[in-house]
Amino acid sequence: MKKILVTGGCGFIGSHLCEKLISEENKVICLDNLYTGSVKKIEHLLNNENFTFIQEDITNNIDIECDQIYNLACPASPVHYQADRIKTTITSVIGIINLLDNAVKYDADILQASTSEVYGDPIIHPQTEEYFGNVNPIGIRSCYDEGKRCAESLMFSYKAQYNAKIHIARIFNTYGTNMSINDGRVISNFIVQALRNEPLTVYGSGNQTRSFCYIDDLINGLVTLMNSDKAGPYNIGNPDEYRVIDIAKLIIKLTNSNSKIIYKELPQDDPLKRKPDITKAMNDLSYNPSCKLESGLINTINYFREIIK
Ligand code: UDP
Image (cartoon, rainbow, N blue to C red; front, side, top):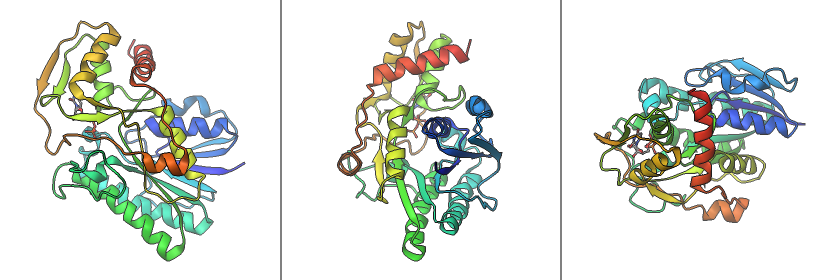
């Protein structure tokens, strides 16, 4: 039985990870400051004797004995991470320093939830891990992008100087159950709008692309990476690429909605395209995302139907 710290455990991805780790008979300490996360997502685990919830911020000193640390603590939706840009960068940078110190102290493995945003608005397509990216260092996304890039840098510095057992996952757009109604990201926005028969808000022309990974595939990738001896970074996502406008149309169809599509201004530095090259994860980790968009969307729609009743 391993003792595993999950920071950001009350978030969308963190709550699924806690669930999976508990089902595999581990002891889980879920730490979250509840800035965007919610205890509701892990409520069903609170009575489990192997599960502990601590309300805490990773920018405060952390001293928790454990075998593994998954760091998922950071607002990840553009709307939320731009709400307090200074706090977002501090969370990524000071947070990972605290967690790396804790990992070194207890000789724990540490996995950093990095992001496709390290590639910025990419010129290389699809994105391989070797690509250094095209990030605007002073744009509205930079608080998140540069914070995550600095966290990756710190992971490798701790590996070089303290032999830290690091693992870096670059997470691409992910969706599924446990997303919040007010998450603000495209799939949850469109589903909630469609279920309420409100207009779907497409930003820009809708020709920009993203590649969407269902949560179960992502969780499998993270757990496999953590339990490997690989540092990475690894792209973890699903390479099936769609235009935003086509996602809107598909969600209207799958929800049987009367919603129309309206167009809004494209936010600054919104990447034109994004698609992971997952060859490295497939070769090294046997990573193979299998959930097709339509079936993942149906699960997610059913989940939102229940919570917006
Ligand atoms: N988007 C949109 N309508 C929305 C929310 C997002 O058209 O209500 C677009 C957004 O401009 C971006 C894509 O969908 O091009 C994905 O946005 P999201 O916020 O999900 O995450 P990102 O991949 O940009 O970090």
